Length: 110
Ligand code: HEM
Image 1 (cartoon, rainbow, N blue to C red):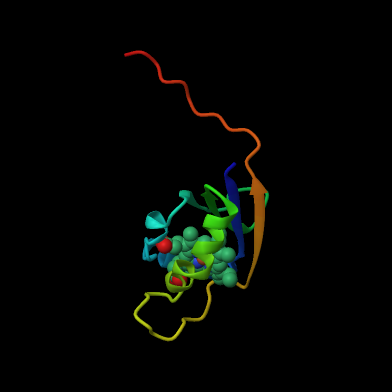
Image 2 (cartoon, rainbow, N blue to C red; image 1 turned 120 degrees about the vertical axis):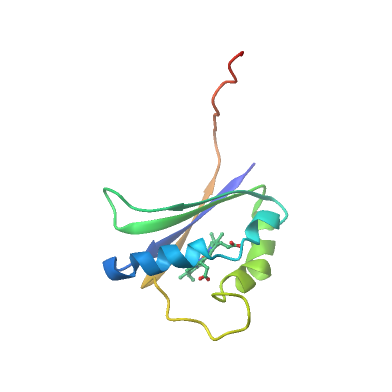
């Protein structure tokens, strides 16, 4: 069963652009991590002020393995060993879910 891990980021209005730029320049290593299934950066439009970093993994173990290794390198803000920049987010919370059901569009005949 897949697991969904959502990092909830509190981002002050004046930091939104900084946050999005950092993600635009993200390491891109998560795509190559074992068991990685999906990533989305979700910008709030209505109902909340928080950005969501949505990730889905084949298993809890795959997520933990990413957290212990590649995740740390991907959060250095460039990965060249430079000192960490001031965070764009003022706070973060990790939400964990199990996928109970899912659906995808039916493939239509051409
Ligand atoms: C401690 C709080 C965290 C903050 C403030 C934060 C913020 C950020 C930022 C600004 C980036 C863009 C790259 C950079 O500038 O480093 C990034 C990348 C990313 N973050 Fe986080 N993050 C945190 C923890 C987490 C956690 C717990 C997850 C797990 C879902 C996560 C998932 C990701 C992913 C998947 C990327 C893209 C990595 C890649 O491209 O390989 N982050 N994060």
